[in-house]
Length: 281
Image 1 (cartoon, rainbow, N blue to C red):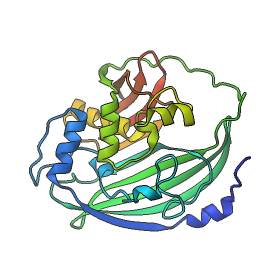
Image 2 (image 1 turned 30 degrees about the vertical axis):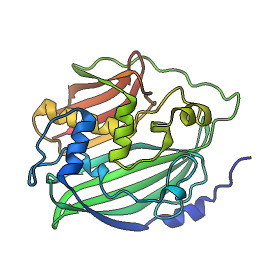
Image 3 (image 1 turned 90 degrees about the vertical axis):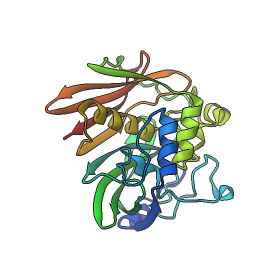
Image 4 (image 1 turned 60 degrees about the vertical axis):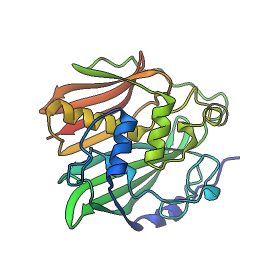
């Protein structure tokens, strides 16, 4: 039976705010570098890696209160959308100053919009959240986060036409989507969504062919790749998820120069563009 969705009630969440803060310790940075197989400075006062704020200020929901999919219960800060599948569909970031290790990070979040649409697989509910991140009175970044909730596709639904394989970028790097990588990234970001680490749940309950590579992980890797290619952090970065990538297989980070910035994307081996992104300076 299709869940009842009262969009007018859900839109009552527009304007709701949440404020949190957390100390960015050297240990968090060390754990993120270890997760990504990277090296970098970890002493207090050094610039922190791009998008490490996704490791901070996450809700500390008790394990017993988590839903069947591993997510915190809905209806607190985020509206209680009754659709069963959810994902981080994309976002955009404007960077003002670098976040430094050892600082206390504050995040003020606002529900900006809630919109209902119809897709080929059924209803889609988009929730737009903005995050304002500061530290000691300094503006660090502003982030728009696009969340999407959707129905389970009905039996016999028309399969999607598979898009063409992604091209290779002029710069390209391969990443192995090991289960340990996905588990560690979920751990360091305190993300208990089971599709990233629980193979039986992911394949049996949600019908995916394997563990799902996190969208924010792909975005972090692309943003840091852009920084590496240009030698400095971008001032703006945006991304959009198109198709999933599954674990225990390689995927690639790709980049090419375009209109003064970098066009970036991820793709599984032989697969279509999974996430597209843009970095500007």
